Image (tube, rainbow, N blue to C red; front, side):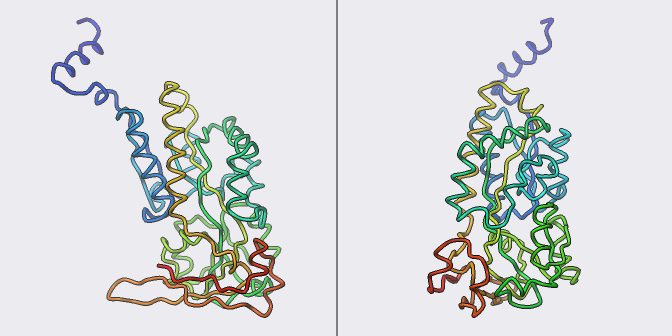
Length: 328
């Protein structure tokens, strides 16, 4: 045969191998947190669904714990095309798509249901289109969670307790400005550097969703957890737009549907924020068994000054029922 591609196809068929094996495309996706997190569930699900929905034509390699760089570095790699996919919080996203910064305003949403309704509705879907002019294909909004604060200095029962705390923040101008308003000394930092910074006392504390806090084992280097619920933090599946545009419409749809399925899977594994604790002080304790430790919410008590802290929902302001159930 004069056509080498046809000759190779004939050889594959003669050997009884699936033709898809010859045409498999490998891609990479990364997260900055551990595999045993809701984001880990998300990218594992995406990889599995893409391979299934494309009959093996696309295989996605998954990378965890910032092994390919922090969130900002991964977004840059996707934009440049040196990496095809990433799942990231919206923390560094406004540096690439300024319109997304509105999502990180503290107390913007009443609760998760309100946030999901906005992201899945016209506002959120229109915002996904903003990414295309920046070299991205935004596949879907995903779940990061409601953000809470930890620190090694003191309980945080009211906004005044935040004054003077040196806190790691995401590389996000909205977060930095908001936390400075609370009197926090802000230290923007990539997530892979946070555990060491807390351990060495470079910063006093940090803020993240519960699922991230637990997956990162921050209880090993932090004394106090405050369920402030100050920001609902979405995440987003981003893909290099040129790579997406090269695919057939059927494969493009497969990636979009896989991202939706990954979002559903990761949302199911995200611990719910106990809304009644939003204006309360909680602390954790650690119980050790041999070499492992288990995170336990040990107390949730109303603060005498909690009325000055803005709650995330009506329930948090009116209910007196402690809502910090034991969790591991």
